[in-house]
View 1: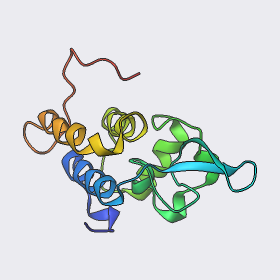
View 2: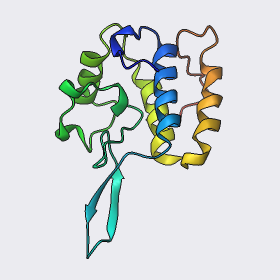
View 3: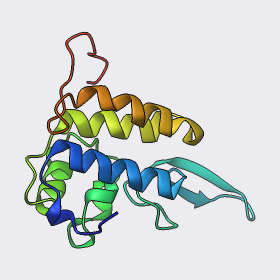
Length: 140
């Protein structure tokens, strides 16, 4: 997997980049804060975790465009989309695809990611652009 985000130009290339990142990482990116003693409480998914993990969208935000104030914002919000666009200059950001991939990271079990990510292939009939079918309207 290339770390050069500027080489990504199509929805499918970005999908492949994110998919490979998530499967190689094999863990959710979550913010945890100390509680009592050594016990930690999960505070939820994050673009960047305390232990340097990155979520589906966080992995396509370059270090120079990441800011902790992005945490807590949805991946389709303006500030996050701007950080992605600044990071992946040669790609027309597809917020619907990002929401779908972020939902897999946030809501599915890690050991099931590969199934849901592989199922997304149906959204790339030409291996180029992401296509959302009308009956799939769960994404806000």
